[in-house]
Amino acid sequence: MKNTIKIFTYINRFLMIITCALFLTIMGGMLAEILLGGFHVISALILFVFWKHLDNLERKRICAYIFTTTIYLFLFLYFDLLNRPEFYETFLWVILIPMSLAAYYTYILENLKKRML
Image (cartoon, rainbow, N blue to C red):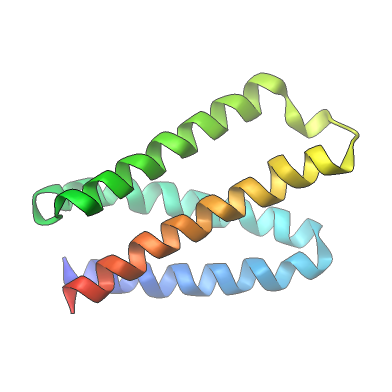
């Protein structure tokens, strides 16, 4: 479990840095968000394998992340938010919310790594 958390943390750090750097080109950052989000969802689901080894606070955080991400995805698809011409809506739904979710998941992984070591 320790090695898995370490690997997830290092991959996450790399992807977060790349995504933030690619936001200088905006489109590159939005494309990198897809890769980052995919990694986050897959790694969060893999963490369910270690569910018994996590304490209650970590479990609640992971459940909150999965719940919030699911709600965001359903709202995004339901309202077809990519076809909104207003900049602030695009910025909110395509950049701000996904990167906030990514920051929260980074916080979860960093705390897990800190506890494991």
